[in-house]
Length: 305
Length: 334
Image (cartoon, rainbow over all chains, first blue to last red; front, top):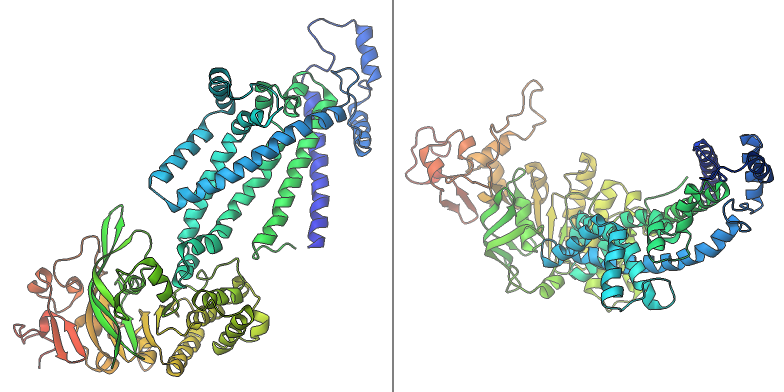
């Protein structure tokens, strides 16, 4: 196990290096630069700016410089926002995104898993139809439509919730639903189909033949088996929800990390692109790693190394 | 012999998208105390569905349409779920065909046996439960029981898993053990060990067994009486010797002819029964075996034959046994 973990950590570092390199190459392959704008800068100014940020060095040197800084925990200065560093973006944006993200994850899990269970156990009846109906809506309607729709009804018409910010518990309600809608629907459907499959297994019949009540058959034998596929999807889902969403943060005017994913690219803010990409990638890889370790605990058939 | 279980006119169907599959169409039999009854038939004959119907363990699409299952003065097809939970495992236990998939993969084998004990004897302490489970592991001859107790099912072979299933089934000293093809998925040598084990346990514990199989040879080793099923019905019921020495149904004869014989010349092929079993969504009006029966006449195809009671323990459902049957070309008439 220890050997496996060490191997995985080395693999993770390699993956991150590869991602950083690819991002770096792609970023520089896109036309334009951080100081390109509608109004052409005098050549001397542009040259001075490039020199200041070492953008006139050959690309391999720039990459190496960046990586050396990265190892020292320095993500570099933002090219777009004078005086702010990319570390700043993350330390100020991530807590906001994470706070919303954690709340959303709790909401998604607490709602989606019971929904899936009810739908599976009441297969074909109205409870199932209701859950599947809601789930289909959740998967098909884009989050910005849900967000603006909810905002129109609950904030504008009814005035129950604030439209922007994250100041009180009320202000969490709409962004959480809008952000989690897709995951909620997806996990509810996955839970349902997984539990339905498990309920048809031979060992469930064995459990019934033991004289266990249906409640115990489900809680002791079916659920643990049915949760395995749900845990698989949980890693990427958590990484996604925690690192913020551009759309949701834009609509609800939240100073999160999600905004930077898009803005850094349109601004060709090289250091910001690298910073948020590597941060997200590291987070995602770590979550997948945690899930894989978690598997081991829940399923004895899975043995690493 | 005291009768411990009586099945009367059982009809079980499955509702599928292609219509109602009438898997069991009026099966009646009784089981004596301490008796080992075999139910024989090919795939789709309704033998497994009959056994599942007794404890109402049918898949969600299955329905018991008619009939009664009397056990301990109660009709199991009608008792409330709660009462059924006490009977399942406690009084009537089951083992299944596929030991590879019949144990929960996430749970230690010892725990799974303990759970059975905890369900029916909740007063026992954890230590007592564990001691009993270990004793059962020894009883079914799992080597190094203390060590294997904490194993997971995937660490066991098929034969060992079936032993765990048997240990679990025997945990609460059931009055009836229903074994649904318990050896079909196992190697022949393991099959033999499991059969010997079951016979020995039956003698020691005095429980009744319903043994379901497609293999008449296996039945001969364990059972004293046999039901031969086909097309969801009992074709013939007799003591084991009568089945082998004086079968009174063409289907039973066909089954016997298809058993490989060690004395047989190597060049001689097995004699299969030509044709295939009937489609149970639309079962034939007459004898279900008639389309494959070498002796079938028109009446066999048109009308269901009645049971002929040949002696108190032997009955068969065949037109050839009725008084009107022609003597000519009749295997049952001199």
